[in-house]
Length: 242
Image (cartoon, rainbow, N blue to C red; front, side, top):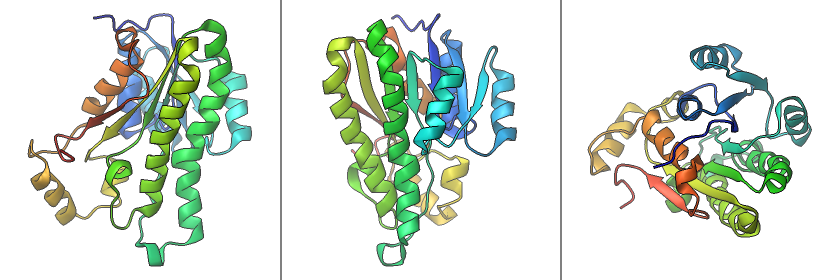
């Protein structure tokens, strides 16, 4: 199985912690030159970069198209893009503000559009590219208190399938990975311990996933071995949505 990404350059948005950090490590282990994007937490991003030979950092709010343009001007082009940046602003619909809605859609969905659009021209010229969007099982089935997050992650699924159909003839694949419950700083900030235990109980494997398990799925879709896979959503949730 060909998992070699030597000579390829990879961008991981939100790569300074959690799943993004695990993805950055995995792609580097496959030989890719990795650029780790972060928005605010430089300390965490620097810690991850220190573990990865040759990794570089690029600070940018990828929800802002002007900052995305600056990122690509300074570090692009890229052969591999992993759209992982995301935030949570969980509230029941009747308590959710317009700002809660807008911020999550901006970071969790619009950012993937801006980054993908910036990456595609060079991929088209080289007739090779890998785009992987990190969505969620919440985007497939919804969840109370997460209308904004679910809408953004569902939107990523639509974006993934549309991009795959537009760019397949140019040798570019676009897929998504939908994690189940994975304990990260992001999930810990929004879920109570009781909710976490219930999610584990409902998961057939009876445990939470790990960031490295999600990263392995992402990395496979970025590899030459996945050259005939596009427009797919790979669910990695321990059977939770089965």
